[in-house]
Amino acid sequence: MPSKKPKVAVFFAEGFEEIEGVVPADLLRRAGVDVRVCSITDSRRVVGSHGIEFKVDWTWKKFKKNAGGFDALVLPGGSAGTENLGAFKPLRKALRRHFAAGKLVAAICAAPMVLGDAGLLEERRYACFPGCQSDDFGGQYQPDAAVVADGNVITGRAAGAAMEFGRALVRQLAPAAAEEVDEGVQYGIRGLA
Image 1 (cartoon, one colour):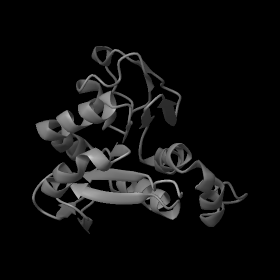
Image 2 (cartoon, helix red, strand yellow; image 1 turned 90 degrees about the vertical axis):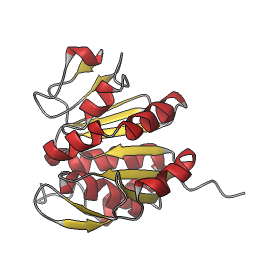
Image 3 (tube, helix red, strand yellow; image 1 turned 45 degrees about the vertical axis):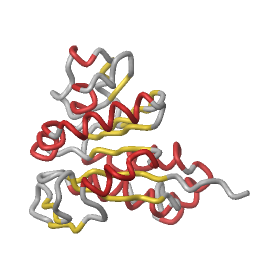
Image 4 (cartoon, helix red, strand yellow; image 1 turned 120 degrees about the vertical axis):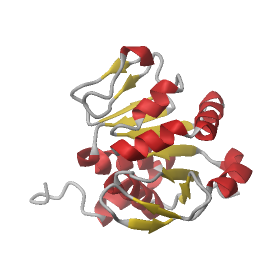
């Protein structure tokens, strides 16, 4: 019997950092993961922090009806995007339920603040954009890390770590495809870094 294809929701909110949302979603799709890019509103159109407009797969209502079927919830950062994610209380409830079920939650740049405010970084090592860490999160900020995977939480530092963040998600959710994805995007090829 074939194994179930992992399913991931990546949440785009107005003002999100485009690289931090698109790169992980792209790498996960290359790995064969079923990725749904979701808005936190009733609109399928979301504008990122640099004015790029996206048409997402699902609105919040559609996600809410299917929330239990996801293996991971992913939050890109960006200042305004993170504020919008953090202000949306239904997302915080979904993150807590998901986390409590032992499923993966992930956030990059400023978005780990959403996880921290929801109590999901307690006793966890985490990365985030410098200045977005807080003792109130109850975790251990890793100032020199690009990406930190600790149990069912993956966090990343900033846009420059989007590739590493996406690769960490692939390694966790579709490990058999990780090498093929790296080869396909020529990751680690001398002269590209």
